[in-house]
Length: 282
Ligand SMILES: [Zn+2]
Image (cartoon, rainbow, N blue to C red; front, side):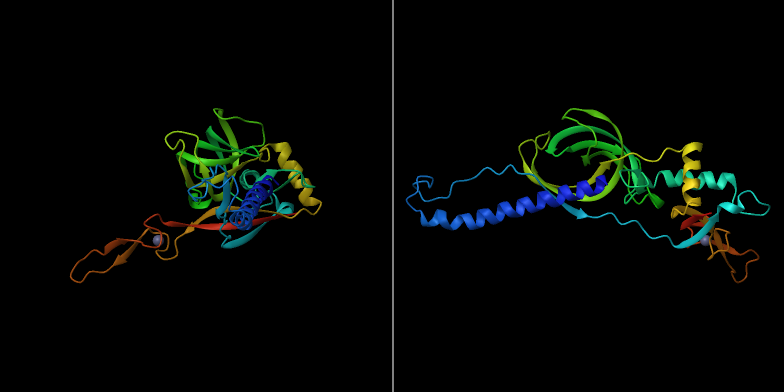
């Protein structure tokens, strides 16, 4: 929901900027025809217009890698002998699920996150309007294999859900909205007064589902009523290339012992990560 707002804001800004440019272009002609106009400097040079507008455009959108395999968790089999469906496994899946969902105004009360969710410590540096800010921020890596790299002392673009002002510091849960390019006249050190384009990670403040027994029960009830629920997790499976040994044996002529070379499939880790989508069904 809020992501849509951010994208809409990005879109609006882009459109208004394009409109502004169009106006400027179309406005050039009449100015040229009115050569005797008082606005035109005597030396014939065009007046330099101070452009302080802020333009935010999407630079790189979020792409959540598709799961490589799928499996099913059947609630009816929960804790049955030999079943993989255990309370512990359900809790693990649910914990992952809460971090892949954002609370919003949709009929279910929440929807699937479209970007990785992380916690962000921020200090606001510049107000970009519409509750968007440039912030000095730090966040831990998120997503399978840390797809979203951690930010340390990084400038980021934040869209808040609450009123804020320059100088505020705090911590929010944010959903990564991709990388945005922002053209602005900086109003913070050490870029103060410079007009430049920054490419920065953009985050939307959001609320995630509560990881509690009551919240899990609510989800189970909605699945039993037909809700379509799936969660993506990183599963570690034995490396096929080395058979889960972490090394590959090479016989060396004239030597009694094999030569062991680290497996290139798993870098000696014995396991590989397999992003897995688990559908939870009644
Ligand atoms: Zn291996």
